[in-house]
Length: 147
Image (cartoon, rainbow, N blue to C red; front, top):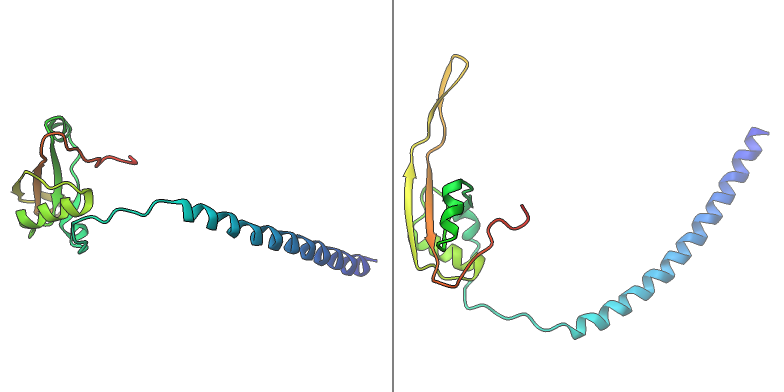
C-alpha cells in the first residue's frame, strides 16, 4: 500500500503545481502592463554638467567619523579619508562627481601609520591621508546616509 500512496501523492502534487504555475503566469502577464503606464509618466532625469569618470571611488576611501569631524560639518566642512596619492584637484573632482557640489577649498594632511605588535612580531599600520573639504555657504552633502 505504501507504494500506491506514493504514486498517487506524486500525481496530485504535480497537478497542484501545474495549476499554481498557470495562475502565476497569468498574474505575471498582467503586471508589466501596469509598469509600462507608470514609466511613461515619469519625468526624465536631469543631466549633470560633471563628467562621470569613476575616479571618485578610487580617490575617496570613506568619510572620517570622529567628534571633531562631526563638529566641522556644522561649519560646512566635511572630512574624508582619501587615497595616499590623491591630489587636491582629484579630490575636488571626486566630490563634485559624487555629490554634485563644487568644493570651495580642500586641505589635506598625511599621517604615518602607528607601530604595532602582534605577540612577538612587530608591524606597522598603513600610512593614510585625510582631506577636509569646505563647501560654499548654503550647500550640504549627506555623507552619513543609511548609517
